[in-house]
Length: 63
Image (cartoon, rainbow, N blue to C red):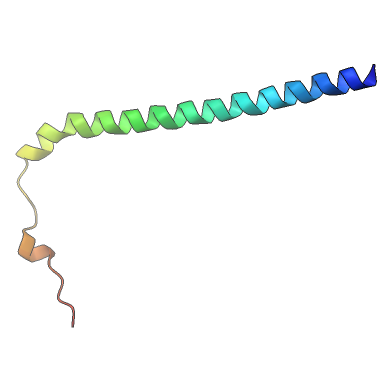
């Protein structure tokens, strides 16, 4: 009987770990989707904004 109780506890623990991992993956995917949506929705706005720096401003001189 002890073996059965131990196995049930192990199964519950494994299920809890798997549930936690799935929740983390879903959270990461949701965050990536929100970032992509933000990028897409801001594209038109940012394309219309003037550039603050030119290419020549961004060049770095290495010696």
